[in-house]
Length: 554
Ligand code: ADP
Ligand code: MG
Image (cartoon, rainbow, N blue to C red):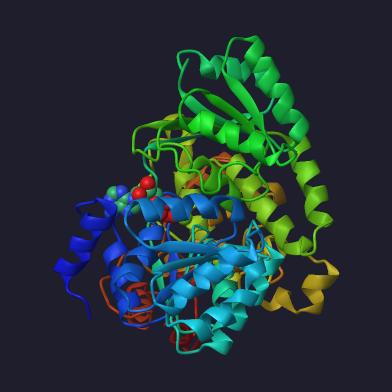
C-alpha cells in the first residue's frame, strides 16, 4: 500500500498539480492493490494520471494500449518532458530504434511503454524481456462493437489477461452505458474488475436543440457576439465540412475544414492552428477531437444529428474543459434521422445501432430536462432539473402524471420486463391483436386499464418515463423495457411524477390513491396500504401485487 504523502508528492513532482481530481486517488489506490479496474470518466476528467502516476511508482513497466499511433509520440514527448521515462513501440519504427527500446526494457529503464493495438505481437517479447507491473487500456470502448468507435484490433486484447493473468489491468474510457461497460469487461477477461464511475455532469455546458432548418442562418446568428471564440461544428460528411468552412470564411470567420480525407500533415497543421488560437472554428467530421486537449473551446455545434448519445456527449464534452460557461447546439432534422437509419441498417449490428439512434432522437425531441436524459442514459440520476438547457429555460406545461406512470410501470412489471414499448402500450390500451392474445396478456390485471389514452400519447408518456429515469430500454436485448430502481418509488412510495402535457386535459384530474408510509420493506408498505384502505376494491388494479411477487421484487 502506498502512503498518501507519496501519492501527492509524485503528483506534484511529475505533473505539477497540488491535488487529485474526484476519483483519481481512489482509482490509483485500487491499482496499487493489484486489482483489475474499469474507469469510466468523462473526456477531460483526467484518466491518464490514473495509470501514469502508478507507473512511476510501480517497480516494473506499465504497458499502455492506445488507439492513436499519431498521438503516441506527442504523449511520450510530454511524459519525457516531465521527467518520466516513456517510449512507444509500433510498426512504423526502424528495427534499430526498437532494439534500443528493448535494451532499455531489459535494464528496467522504462516506466511507460505505449503500444498500438495492431502491434500486440511486441507485447510478449516485452513480457519476456522485462518486468511488467500493469497493463493500461486507454479508450477501452474501442473493444466493443456496442460502443461508438469500434476498432477491430482491440478485440485481440482479451489475450493479454489470458496470457498474463497475474498482471493487473486498468481499462479506461469515457463511454459509460451499461451494455458497453459489461462488454468491455467480458472481452478483456476482467470479470471481477472494480468499476469506478465518475459523474458525467458537466454543469458549465448549456444544452440546446433546434429544428435543423436554415442552419447556416442560425449559425451566423449564434456566432454574433462570439467573434474570436473557439468552436467546433460537427458535420456528417466531408463535403459539408468544406462547404461550411468556405461559407464561414466568406463571412469573415477564421474557419477550417477537418476530416479523414486530408493528409496527415494538413491535419496536424489544422489541429495546431486551433490549439494555438490562430484559427477559431473547425468544421469537422467526428475524425476530429479524440486526444485533443484544448481547454478554451467555448461552443460546439452539431450541424447534423450524431448517431448516438455517447458520440454526442463526447463531442459536446470538448467544449468548456476549463470549467467556464460554454454552449452547445444540436440541429435536429428528420432527413438526418433517415440518413442515420440507413447507416445503422447497413452496419453489422443494426438492431443495437437503431435503438441507440432512437434514444438520440428521443433526446432531441425531449419535453423534460435534457441533462437528466443525457445523464440517465449513462446511468446517472440528478435530483433536480438543470436549469441550463433549452427545455428548462422554456418548459412545456406539466401535470401530475403519477397515475399514468403507475399504470405503465405496473404493466412493465407484469410483463416481466420482457416486452418492448409497443407491447406495453398494447396491454395498457387493451389491444386485441394476435400477439397479445397468443401470449395471454388479456389476463393481466392492467390489461385495458388505460384505453382512454391514445397510442401516440402513450408512446410520448413512456418516452418521458424513460427520459426521467423510471424505465430503461435494454437495447442489446430486443429493446425490452425494464424498470429502474426509481420505478419502485412510484409504485410503492407514491412518488409523484410530472409529465409534460401532450394532449388530453381530463387525464390531469385523476386523484392520487395512497399515502406515503415510512415502513422499510415493500412488503410491509403494501400490507399497510391495504389495511388503510377499508375495501379491497378501493385499491386500483394496477397497484395490487400478490405477496409472492412482492417478495420477489425486494
Ligand atoms: P482524459 O483522458 O480523461 O480525457 P486527461 O488525462 O487527458 O483526460 O486529462 C485532461 C486534462 O486534465 C489534462 O490537461 C491533465 O493534465 C489535467 N489534469 C488531470 N489531472 C489533474 C489534476 N489532478 N489537477 C489538475 N489538472 C489535472
Ligand atoms: Mg485520455
